[in-house]
Image (cartoon, rainbow, N blue to C red; front, side, top):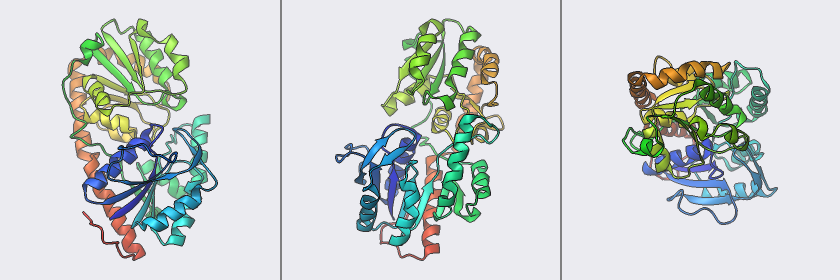
Length: 384
């Protein structure tokens, strides 16, 4: 099957990881993938080997949203007409093109699938969740015209249906992790960090991730010199937080770690992974940590609470995160057998529900269902 994938290659974010992992897995199953993304004329070489790439012109892009040029929609339409894919799959980049895609694909008679990433926490009523609520309300009328919309949780599905997206068009396909690549292992990183117990946060340093609450709890917990908190990632709040939570308190700021192998090694060395977010969809970082056999603590934002339910991890309420963590940190430090057990349960949960292989199988079935409903002949490419 030939899939035209519209997604992101930069700047690094969960959408980038999602696109890379899914398209590589589709290629491994003998599908053909064309990757359309916002880039300058010269594409980054080698990242998506095996994909034919198409660059779409843009004025601005960030981890959150993208502003295309006025001619981007014409470039996209001409490219799809030339490529003649069986299915178009848009891993939505929060750009105006998202709203034009249904009309473009209808004119070309191409089935259109979307993955809708924006997180929200239906239990909160703060400014940030209000912004996310607006995003859902803005997108719902357009998503109703996609053949399928892939989301990650029942909560998201119910909300989109309430906003008018036909229920038969909304498919829950949770994120998946390559469990051979992300797996438990041994390394010497603890010695490098001079740590006996290693706690890790991996993600954006931004308001919705609530990193300051975690840091405040860590500082007040007095964890001792042999406990370290490693922060992997970058973002707008990093310059304002780093000076106040530094090595004096056992906090190690690594910044953005581009090399995937290094990120896996950090997770393998970790005893505990912390995700204190106000808002989430379904965190790939959380699933990666779980696959590496790390004890995980996360809020019940988005689908993360579903992932850790029934003892697969420790679930925090999105309210008063700092208070909860201040109680938990010493317990997680002192009870090694408990964290080992949590790590084993986390790995088992991923193997049971959140493997990349399972994700791709569901996605391929969705493509076939969409094609059959539209009664389009396949272009002759292999179906696995």
